[in-house]
Amino acid sequence: MRQRVRNLLTILALSFSLVVTSCASFEFTQAPTSTPTVLKPTPTTTLTPTSVPPTPTLTPSPTPTPTPPPIVSTEPSSVNQGGVAVIKLVTSSSLEVNGSLNNGHRLHFAQGNGYYFSIIGLEAWSSPGTYTATLNLRYADGTETSMTTTFEVATTDFRVEQIYVPPDQIQLLDPVVVNSEKEQLNDLARPTSPEKRWRQVFLVPTEGEISSPFGERRSYNGGPPDGYHEGVDIAAPQGAAVIAANSGIVVWAGPMKVRGNAVVIDHGLGVYSGYFHLDQVLVQPSQSVERGLAIATVGQTGLSTGPHLHWETKIGGTNVDPLVWTEREIP
Ligand SMILES: [Zn+2]
Image (cartoon, rainbow, N blue to C red):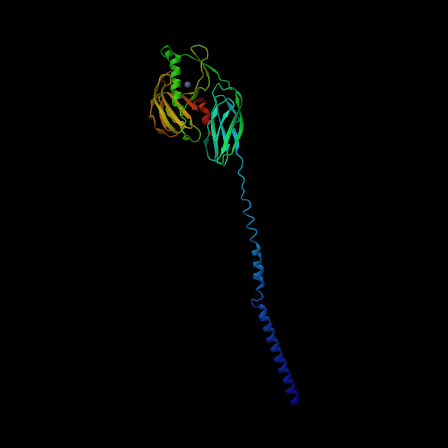
């Protein structure tokens, strides 16, 4: 019996040691598998995408970015006689541009933000119909090309206005007097200063009704129609404020025979505005004026049948309807 118990105990001790050793061996074999040696292959697989370098070489391929071709247009596409058309050349390229209309009128271009533009003043008697502008472009590398754009000049029905001039003013209708003053104004408005000084739309320079629009044919004291109205008349009381329609430099501030006390402002790029028959003149020649500044008061000096402001605008020496500049921003 004692022998049996001893045997049993040895069996138990042996199986226990076996369990222990098996457990120990299990732990031992488990340990090396969880060691970083198993992780080693993984970094190599994540490293294999180092074969990506070929892709970056693909990204520089779209370097030949094509410059979009220039776009030319005329705004608006239909203009009244006495109106203003703007030819716009939209381009990101630096180039030289000039051109002409099919009637021979030369186009002068100035640079805007991302475009070149030319402002065309259409005389009140300009022929109606289709006008073609041809633009000659010269790129920095010497390449040349030409483009065209067209616009319509619509017939405008200008009225004939009968004007009765009192005997003491009749001498102001003398063609010699009228023409010499016209020459004087043309000389004042001939220079094309390179800087664009105006901004936004032009302001109507005094408050009041338009008593005589631009372009009207005029008959003096019952005579045949002679010439046309080169500006607009705004009926306003004597002494009412006259403001600068836009910013610029005063090139005339003083009396004229037919137009009376006058102010002429250079807005740059060949654009001028004139204010006539004034009572008081509040500015000096060479003075820089801001859009909206009070420059004079309404009067009836010169050839005038009552207090009003006669307001003119010129572009490239051509008289155009001043109200056009108040209706839209040019260019
Ligand atoms: Zn007038």
